[in-house]
Length: 591
Image (cartoon, rainbow, N blue to C red):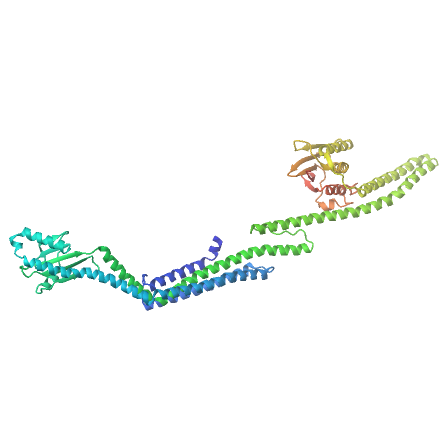
């Protein structure tokens, strides 16, 4: 996700600028911005909005084009393009429909907002509130006339009985529901007062206005929470009556808010077209960004998905051509796709293993037929040859001079040795050809190995052979006893002959054969490690090939027999070079 944001940082910056400018334009249209609402400013804002929006569209188009170009491979490209186009259309069509519907609803709601009934209601509500306040404020004019009339009747009390006059003022204030009642002189100084709050000096120009007029002067400030009036008292000398009526401050505040609401209402009505444009720009920018994100995610998802599909297609083609060494890269993707790649590779491994087993089986079968025919063809003349040698020895030995008899005997012995060697070879052919299917039965693997170690020790006791069991007890598994005896006899004998061959070149080498038994999960592992000549970088397939040998006197059938036995027991074998010798690793199922 952070990589996606980093790669599209410039697009995101342009989007933020576009969105911010759209909101600024909207606020300007409704008179709530720091930019003055005039035609020039609005034209500049709209031009900048359109320029940023075009740049935004171009950047998105180029990014999507490059993403499609970079993420679609040759194989599977058609399917990938179809997937991206389908995903884009499924996102674009609903978005367009919702956008058109939303803009229509917004325009319709705006028109309804400026309906004549609503406009009349707004105007009437403001006028009602204003008239209500004005009525409260205008009432003081009639009240001050009545108070002045009463005070003129009792003008003599102000000098004759000041206390009674004060009581008269208090009574007038209560009866007339006036908050402040003051008598002041022509300079605005206080003479006497009946009030619940301190007197604030009246403006001189108000006194001058009523100085030669018997009518009261109403002092009104629409946005103050008080109403006042002043009148000249005709029966007093240089005296004026100044009364104040306080109005609830919330009413004044409500009136201010009502006027602001009306002004805002008419501002919005006058700029309704610009507001529609601003809203459309903001909405288009948001929808475009969402579309861009949706298509970008679709491209990344489909590309990641089709990379795996393309790998499978490519691997399938190679497998179809017979290349079973092909592997599908196990890329990090969806769990299902990872599982598919893993199972595909396992399937290839099984196919390769089965093919190798089939080829090995066919090869063994072919060599068995060859060995059977060779054994039959070679064995037939061996008996007559042996009989002929015996007859020659018994018949002609007497007739040969004493000096030549030893030479004659040596020649006959040479022939007999070669006959024995051929018989040995024929027997190995026969053994290889007559290899039966294994008769599986629970047997002690440790005992079989020890028995063959004892047999080999009789051949050469100078070589140290030891069994190293890494398990706490003997291993009992299913195998054919006779075949496993042949298996371990051949392996240990091969190691023995390899050490003997190496000793001919260097008599000081270590003469050790270690046979290890280990367990790994459900498998038993037997390692036969020797200090002989090693396998001289020969491949496993060559070593198990019939009649292939690295020894001077080998027939090339020993390891072929070993491989066949292991294969028939559902195991595997590996031939490795190990330090200064060789290592044969046998893996058998532990059952």
